[in-house]
Length: 560
Image (cartoon, rainbow, N blue to C red; front, side, top):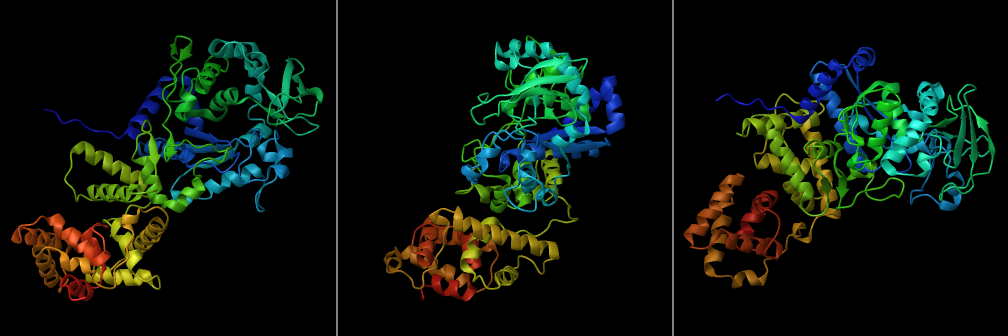
């Protein structure tokens, strides 16, 4: 029987996009000039939530997979900074910032000094972390593209075909304001607002647009009432979001762009953008959408699932959820990247930092790394997936597997080892337990990072049973235990006089259980009792290994 050759999903996408381009003359010509452009965009209306990072990573690893396949691929991330401010983050004082509501984000001052604008500040909160996060993206501004005139041709075509676009809206949504107004939002030259303007007449020959800045067009901003006409070109305004999305594809030369599944609902924003691209701009929509018609809609494909924090979807403008910048304070960038890459786009990620979620994530990563370096025997399919996940997660792949301490062990050590000179003290403990002879610079960095994040996790997210406080004396209740349990403990104490490996300690516990006709869990409970004063605790063997050998031996021998 012929063995199946497994392919990771990013490689399948790369091949699918390549085949699509090869069959389309228009796409082939664009790719020849610009390369394979993988695109994403974000409106920096406030702290950007971590869910957006999922999209950035998906596009980043698709572009990387394309380059692995010899395709000249680029990932471009655009800041939609010409969008209006339509909501305020909870962190900003409404009385100070309300006057900017309705203005383009790029024209609003930054909340902090050192940034060009409000949009620049919130966009760079994330993009400044990209290098550490191993995201290779070309950053651009949608507003700058308008100002440079990149959208002028598409604006002309869209306004000349406004009736077609209105019919697309009516076909998908019925009669709405979008099916009646012209698809352009000028920036009011009097008050500077864009969210309050209503365009109602387009002179195609003069290429001028009549509009009004209405006081009551939207609930979140008030227009000044100005009426006039303006050229729609060179940054004097913008296309509405769905038409703009369609216009970006031929303007930039996009061949691949996903978005969250909320945009890919039937009749949603992707449906409108694809219809405009095909019927008005005569441009094939990027993967995973296509020009194939299905009833009143097109084959728009599927978007990626949400990134939830504690079961809740996040909102940028409403300040809900965990921001991307904050998330990197909870997990190291390498582990956050792994969390997103290991899950296929169609899988929801529900991250809850409390409890065992973070330790489990570390254990998953450790296993993937062991598989990559051939230290675990797995099926071919699992090996291919694990190897690709590791390659897409790690920025600089080492020649041999680096030493990593388990997260649970680190969580114990940070509670037991004094903070002063903790790293060197931990290295001493690990050497004593024969974890390694020496660490290189990178391994030392990994160890220090793991200890720091373990300390944060214990302090902020760990359950009470994880928290450790070693008793100064043996509690009286221990002496009331059955003789079999006490004898097992004392034998274990004698065994621990010398340094032992984890497996040797496990074997000894099981041996004592058999010898005294009790269960291993009875020894565990008794062990926790003499160390912590309770019948439960963290993993016992790592706990034993983290303590001074003389102390632990004496304590188990019930000598104080």
